[in-house]
Amino acid sequence: MDTNHFDIPNRMPAMTLRGVVLFPKAMMPLRIFEERYKAMLLDRLNEDRIFAIVGERENVSKEEEHLELPFGVATAGLIRVSKENPDGTSFVLLQGLSRVRIISIPQEIPYRILEVEPIETIVEENSVELRNQIIIQLERNQKLGGEVTQEMFDFLNPLEDDVAFIDLAAYTLCKHVLRKQALLEVQNLTKRANMLLNDLTRENDRLDLINKALGGKQDDELGFN
Image (tube, rainbow, N blue to C red):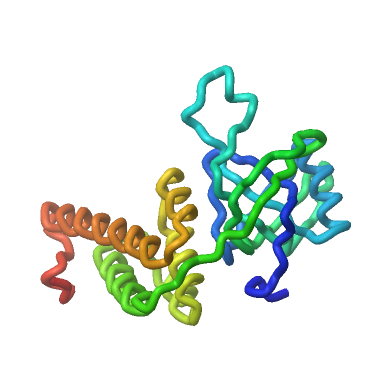
């Protein structure tokens, strides 16, 4: 199934998870064990195999915690793999399809249903230039001993779609949940790419300072200025 050409329904079930952000095109493994989500999974497997992953807000009062208040932007995902385990839980591999804006929550029982509208990324002409700048910082991060690996390069570099490249780089490298959610919510690709580029550059500058202090590899030795 081509995730670039997939009709996104205006109503879909959702898993509301704390500390979790899914991006379009990214793959997310899930363990389904709550009864409400078991029921949701069974329904989805018998229908269009689509449900949303939405982050749960954390800065809420104790009186609001049980409400599982969601962020306003989620990601619709497609069930690629579903395998039931002997203990009644299930393993699911979900692939992100599209950003969606939450309009309302018309149903909570037996599981949460969202009313949504898809969010299309706004692409401008400078996306290729920004992609090249991000690649430079990814290479710099790898040489400075950061988290970028050769496997990441082998995965990201062949991607022809700049939107997918930036989204998957952000999904893979961004470790801070609120920053990840902020990147998800940005509709303009130039702004999204600049946010990722700034984060990478800041992290690389930090690594360079640490390496200088420890006498390790530095930018000037690696050919970066």
